[in-house]
Amino acid sequence: MYKKNNNNYKNNRPDRKKFVSDRGYAAYTEAAENENASYAVCGRNAVLELLKSGRAIDKLFVRKGDREGSITLIVAEAIARKIPVIEVEKAKIDALAAGANHQGVAAMAAAKEYVTIDEILDIAKERGEKPLIVIADEIADPHNLGAIIRCAEGAGAHGLIIPKRHSTGLTAVVDKSSAGALEHLAIAKVPNLAAAIDELKEKGVWVYGAEADGASYYDTKFDSATAIVVGSEGAGISRLIREKCDFMISIPMYGKVNSFNVSCAAAVMLCEAARQLRGE
Image (cartoon, rainbow, N blue to C red; front, side, top):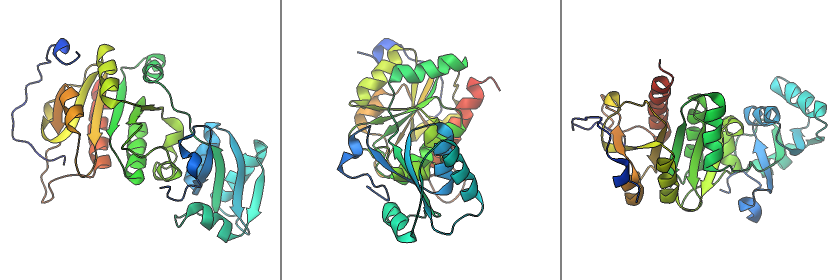
């Protein structure tokens, strides 16, 4: 869905006034929507990043007999933070992971707290940087959302915005797929994505939608506060959100396939936006 478009692109900015008028392996249970609920973070990288983040952890489960490699570091860190370390049979961690590759470790953690849009903008201000934000429109696959979070954090984005409905939340599958990046990226969960975009615009953020029929991102100038919208694998960006975007941009494709996975497309555009915003 992020394929080459033949339209010529002129980056003349429009008048802003015209635009503003799995459960998975998570032991998420029915309390998954409760931000104070706890769930299982599985996998060595994800657990290690969780420990580094300083977020509250109830207990750490380690497979009996596992004391090699990074497990040793994880256990030592948990003990240093006075987190209970419990040795269990593999079946216990298998149950928490529900088939995912847990690598012999699972941590029961308080769910990540969501932030506000203002708090994301404040992060950019504190860093002395122009805001770079990702907006995920109806991303239902937790693996894709986790990969997008990983790309966003790696590119130095200041936050991610997701809708409350028609989207996966911050499940343990998302955490695992982000390879620990979830612990370092601010996430805002909003009831109305269109209204959130309007709010961003009112605060000086330009919104770019990543879609197949957009103009080449090669010709795009990311020189002001920027938000990049990515849509679902099947439907792309929804009609209303598309109408809210200031610009539609795409990635030229040169191979036989006509599109990238949504997280790959996000990585390409975010890295270019980050480069320009930093004056590199």
